[in-house]
Image 1 (cartoon, each protein chain N blue to C red):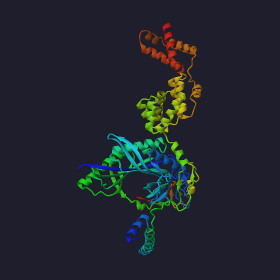
Image 2: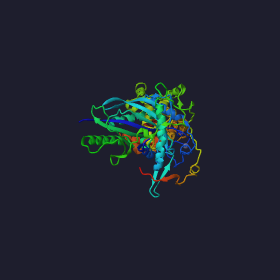
Image 3: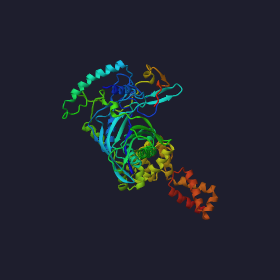
Image 4: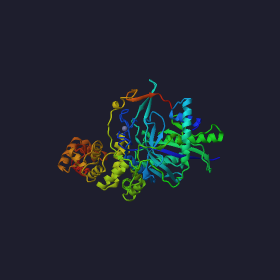
Length: 93
Length: 478
Ligand SMILES: [Zn+2]
């Protein structure tokens, strides 16, 4: 992790870190990077890709429509709503 | 110097399911804002996704129609980006093991036949919709479309002109409509297409700078966007008018130009990783074979069969295969009435006319082939007149009905009661001696007028041949 790559991540995650926090994050990742580098040394050429950590499969459901909640219930804890919409700060593309 | 255009397409298709991909909310288009939502699809903490089996069916069916290999172990991954139309801040999609891979679509253009390779088809969820409110200066979020199932069909960069792109999209649409994967309606947004385009000197094997264009909502807009973007690239290369950069551009069809949106994030920036909330899906032989056995005949196989085995004219066969609903209805009607030409005509002329009046598309045809066949049989057996059969057909578009019973109940059955015909003819002749004289003096049209009046009196329920003969006889004796 460098100052540059952290800056890129800050933008992606919409974070705003203080200089002090930034240094903490960089120091933390410096340690992590070393540990991952050690993993890179393991030969995985003949190992099948692990699709999931748990040896269980998904449960699927039939395509049946059900209405379980009303809009009012769902928006009860919304900070702001308007005409049945969730209301958020304006976004400009 | 001569240039060639290199185009790859990403086509998003909304699947024809009842419910969403990871929850039971309605996937129907429309509805009041936030009416088709639940805690899962609006991203409340602690909710877990449960995969809709039919989405996997359709992902496989699409793959099979496009000659893909099916990944028998398929998994979902998280694609992270931050935007209020995405309540979880990630989209659940497929990155590492998409449901279908390595396919092929064959197209035909004025330059001949060509195969377009398909890289992959993956299943994913749609995002919500934002409305910007100027009055309050806020954005309003509607999650009805959130988690509606999509497949994205990613082609290899094998296309080289607007003509090829359109042929490819039309082919996709036809195959996927046939397999009932989607209605693929661009104007409703159930088929959306992003165009990746670059330009290079002819014969070069180095790809030029690639731009991605979005926001085209018709085939003709796609053609215009490709022409424009190709010219812009060539101009930049030859005249240095601007520096080409890899970016996403929005097509503005009214201005006829594309505009830069934002720097294209590279795949790494989406931080794809396996979704720990959705376990792998294993497609066993039974599941695979069920989907495979439900696939329809390919449209061109149907067309050839209609021409060779059922004796339809090429134009009629071509017309029918534009829609799976028409084909199904045609085949059902033919089975009952045994007359392919009649069945085709009733669909191509009469049913199309009614659909037109109702402002519905051919895919919305919802009368049963069996009922249409029975109706045609009534006409062929001269039990119902053609004019009255058309009235019955209109009623069939409004409600499910048995044509024979409906004809009986509404007095549409042709009567062989010659006594009734004779009295009607006598009354018509007595009321219009002028037409009788005109006919006797050689005016053929006068006979038609008298015939029409009799038909009207009899409500169309008589054998026209018999009526004509009886009428002629009565005029002679008048
Ligand atoms: Zn839901």
